Image (tube, rainbow, N blue to C red; front, side, top):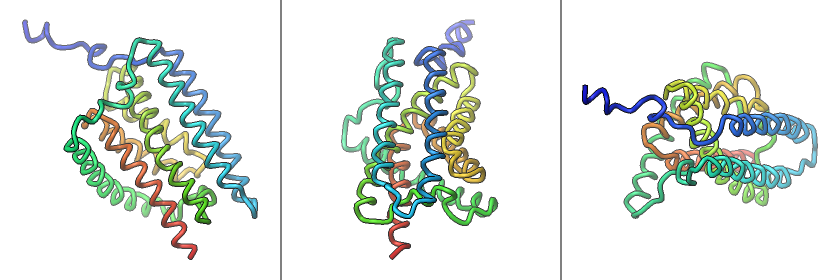
Length: 238
């Protein structure tokens, strides 16, 4: 009786980090952003002199503003920034450990995504290939965008939305799946098959964050993967 009485309830195991209305607002903003992305990528595909730098800078600004929106909801509910971003590194060992976890995760994830991409017959980086950098100046801003995406998107989708979905469903697997589906939907401008692949990638990031209890390794792997895509795109054009 003592063990059952001391066992945490589902609500205690998966507490909300913000109100339901705040989460609906965040999802609505993400939906509008996905529509803007689709229109912008179409313009980049059609334009001979596409302004990629402007596109990158606007995206960087939006992602940080969305993080601010997320943090406002968390703080309004009495939470801390650490809920979304994870505990601070307190030693060099912790930094190296998370880098090592990120490297191992990236290698395994890359192999899985390559296999699934082959099954889906994804020959290139989908419709979003036009948004990849083609000049050195673009590459520099792209890397800044990649770091922003790694930090902000992991905080938003895994640090915030995944926790909220877990709280609503009272289930970790359901929360991971719903967060991954939202992550894929937010990148739907890249095409249906790429959306499936990105949702799978999101699920892997979700499992990593849940098992590790932190989004920091995912941030490192995410930023590295996006940066690598830009570098490879430049190399292939030369």
